[in-house]
Image 1 (tube, rainbow, N blue to C red):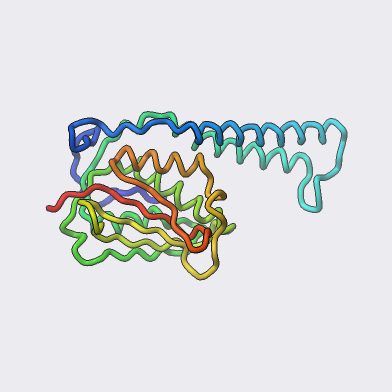
Image 2 (image 1 turned 90 degrees about the vertical axis):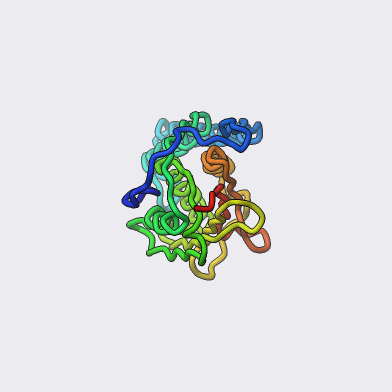
Length: 234
């Protein structure tokens, strides 16, 4: 997966972007996220204990497709991935930013959304975005995009689905509006299935940049997300 800012001759700026009043963007911890984290860890522990009981009792299988060992291996892998993301929620952002034009940002987003398993992403930059510049940490911004893309694909039940994106000027603020949507007609899952912890981590990383992240969809079905990133006219 690519990284935003890589290969675009980006310029170094401040390590910590400041808000309009000169303060760093500090994002408070949400109690709902902590509750969901506790609930998710409880579910993983339940599965681990269940696998252990099956192995102790000598059970041959947990259904037509999984043996106890296979289920244990899958649970450990899923838990490892979940913990890696969850720990990011408590990690200070510590941003080291570069500046990109809106057009450069759009091209870089395409490299982040593309993966070996998924089809090529179509990214459209609206006229006028080239006059705007954004300050982002390439690694942390790419991480937020990657988490969002993975969760959007997850609620569709297909990690090979392509995700298309658009970049345009925000209507009500000095910002760029990025929209990510699943390619194709098939609807995604419910808003809750997006994953509260994963969503919070991606949103927290973007909030540290002074931006925001919101899911979008039709009739309660997630089809993508909208990201706003503060920008300055060049």
